[in-house]
Length: 475
Image (tube, rainbow, N blue to C red; front, side):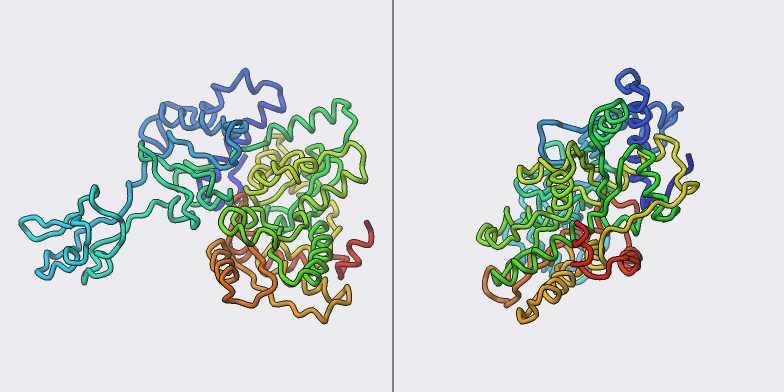
């Protein structure tokens, strides 16, 4: 199977492990051949990515465990493969060879902790045992010779949930982590990854085919329109059905339902923060407890449409497919758990296709047309605010003036929430998207980029239903 379109080789490696695990699971040979999976990926005796083939296979074995669900005792879907986390510099402030040994020694003068010293050539050195990482020395150096070496995972985590443990490996603080997966995508060695529930999905499909009395529904995120660029969207829909799913439903229809309900709730309460992005909701809960009462009471589009399906279809099983690692955490919430049976990312869906040797480019195009334009544009930042405005208009609530802030990434979310908590802004609706760009920037995407926004808007304009009310009237 030729390499699909992935942004990085780390993603491709992750996909290969998922594909091999899925192949064995379909054949009921997974536990018989566990030790052979890493050898299939690295068949020879020469390493391809690490210092030696033995370490490479040891790391692959850990990746296999993550593909099988990871640490069952850890509720966080994001975990660190400690054996793989050993290539990055420790980090912190360091003096580079740009230091000219100047006479001013401003770095020494500004340091309050006595961490700066000089050798016989007057070149500066930093004592790590004394350095407090304040950065004052770097700011005053006229040669910018002092730099801050930040590990990619720490740099990616804007909420400071990642630190280094005693072994100098990354450590995730679950009390801070919102499971957004930014660190997963940015780690150059793939040492941080999301655990997979691909085996749960395969088990559901196999039991369904064996005669279990239930139908499996795939609820797909609207950001799917920007993925699987080598095939047509209708062929992706056909591929999902070929795996064994009964029906494919747009999560965007749930977004239409949320937009209608949330706009009405906003007009009644006067101020809301959105509830669609689980990472954003988690961030509010962990950092702005005073704003928790203002989180919209509506479930996310994923959970909303899943609840509708389960309320109207006996014995339905729901698998959500999207770009989001935080959805794996959301599915464990008590308010969501009854409606979602498993969560897959687009990376995992690709692995499933190839584990069954499905060439979706040869398939007839299926139909995916349940939602409106406004439900579909939830996938990108600003789409939710546009949909809420449309919901106000369609329900005759135009007199309510929407003052929305659409936050593109968790840093913007933090700033908006901080200002609102201090009464510095008069916004009455905060749309929070933890990933930059919105869902199209999710860690579980096959590809990331600005072009994805255009694809989502194009997909939205192709919707048969032109209004939110038209979309939800079929329910």
